[in-house]
Image 1 (tube, rainbow, N blue to C red):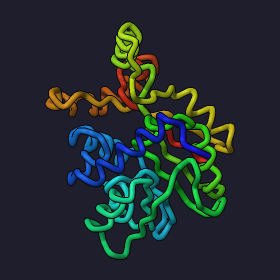
Image 2: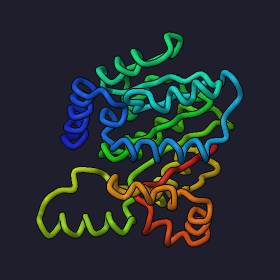
Image 3: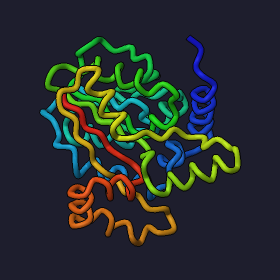
Length: 242
């Protein structure tokens, strides 16, 4: 099936980034501070797994999360549809690590064969995100986990961007999802438990304030008052257990 135009445009952009960029963040399409903030939040929330557990990092880019998983003792597979990105990930990683070229909407993975899946920085470039969710959930065994991040459609700044884009009659160029949609898709395709974690990420020019929005007190506030989490968080991280 041909890719929708939106997805194909992003695929070509990521192939180009993998070809010309060197920094992990540039290849992934984030600022360096943005990638670091996302990785810190995952490190804080992920409980780990037993040594040797098999995890897939789909949409791995240059392999930032894949290498972190390997450092924690699990067995990761890094996968991306950008061959140049996969090549760079392999060059800067241990020779023992496994890499593959593949698409999250068409995973060539045996059903229920993985202990866990990560999919970060991908949903915003998909026009058919539920298909990707179905593929990921279907590849994980009972008791395993799927972790997905997405750009938060309900964030106040995103709402402003959407209004401005509508007034200018210009597309946003990225997909934004709601936590409710993502959670619903996870459950529809087999997840038994779903957690929503708010990820506030400030622009690079305001990075001096990023430690404050990652502080325990601020995170507790967002957790206790979900409407604030929804309005103030640029991204959302979903953890689904099967």
